[in-house]
Length: 234
Image 1: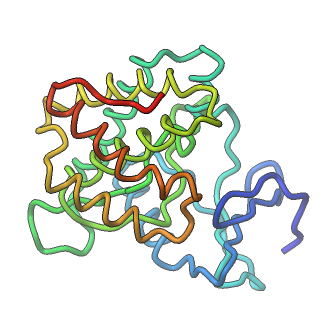
Image 2 (image 1 turned 45 degrees about the vertical axis):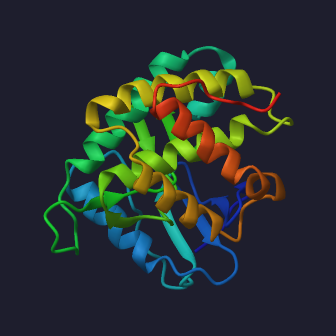
């Protein structure tokens, strides 16, 4: 496998060009891609909009994942540019979660369980010419859909509280619009929010600010979910 230039780096992986069709996502810290590959394959077969999975190379490492090379902005970039409104962004995130949670769990025998992304936020949605595609399936697991709604809300609240994020006000608008739409599906119950907060606290990749703001972010989500005033730090 001939690896091309580095296209970008995230918290867990580096992405390299392979050709015009495929990219190599190579995880750092020895993260194995077996579970992520299985989830993405299952979702692709179920019709969910994940990137296509490429052919594995003979010299591929356990930390390698070859996926479709997507073009187009992330939902976060589109929101920042103003080409997508907060209401439109909320509609898209809700639609994607609806579609995901309509798919039966791959492994769990509990009929209420579904595949959960647990990191579905605007930076993990690519607005490709063929339609929105969801990336970043490392955190996927199975469980109740309310947990996914809680985690998406919690992540948005955390980022919106970061004073270094210039689009904080826009993210707060997105969060409020999202939680209004979640109400039709049962909203974000307190137990789901508590579980999401605990899972988030266990993530070693949180920034110092994200860890510090976690409880405040949970309070914001709880306030907005309950219909009362949300107390954002100024």
